[in-house]
Length: 226
Image (cartoon, rainbow, N blue to C red):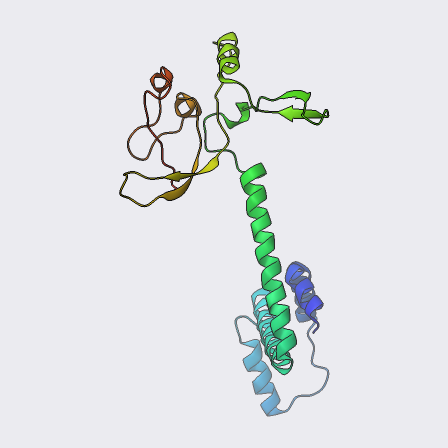
């Protein structure tokens, strides 16, 4: 039986069972049976699963599994005959599967999965249109901090503005005698974590009081990636 027929039969179980019941209900002996044949036929008819949907389904399942095993053995032997081609095909398939999984994870993280913050559907990115150094229209998402403070005061009690800088690589060290480490440094508003509903796993996060005086609270929040 061809592979396509076996796959179709898996989804046509009810039709096949109905056909088997019709065949079993019209069962007749077309030629005389010997004594041994009669005993064999009686033993077959005495089987509790004979002529039932369960018996027919079990028989088809055994045939299907046996045929699938034969196809698997045949395919494995064919792979062994052309090892170079088989290895190239397997590697190409593995690379294609890996690329598809990576693409799906990226799409899931950016588009499908909601952000792990409070009310992610109410987050917006504030930008403005302007003329760039080359004289062409451009979109800017950078603001001077005094302008940010004025805009935040203007929308008070209506919305909350959060300032977040670009993450840039930086050299860090905890003590003067320790080695310098590479990390990404990002400046954020002191009320960012409380607004987004993000809680620390250990210690505390920034608060609005940390923004009262520039450089007055030299604290850092370390992420899991670090």
